[in-house]
Amino acid sequence: MSGPIDRTPPQPADPMEGFAGTDRFKPLALLGRGSMGIVYRIHDRETDTEVALKTLGARAPEQLYQLKQEFRSLGGILHPNLVELYELVVDEREGFFTMELIDGVDFVEYV
Image 1: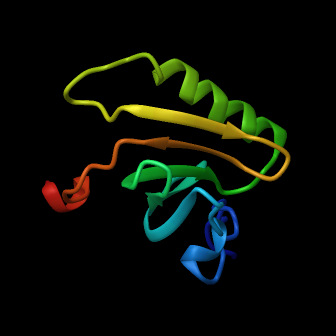
Image 2: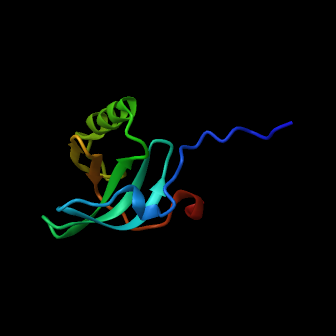
């Protein structure tokens, strides 16, 4: 009998391989992976600040739609307990959004 089916999408061998950066955004570190995307610590050369950047794990049309929906549904909400979303970038090569970078520990470490 076989074991459970692994439904996680294939991951790049090098964690920084998933997002090569742009002229504006330089990847500094991998922060985490979720079911839909990968989050990086990024240096924004235009503002000379560090931000978090969420990109897609795969670039299927339905995932692009989900990324846009996530950004649009959370984009106008400002609250001290939520990260602020900054910019959505979707073009023929990229699909990501930038958001406030919070330094701290992940939830599992906290609990």
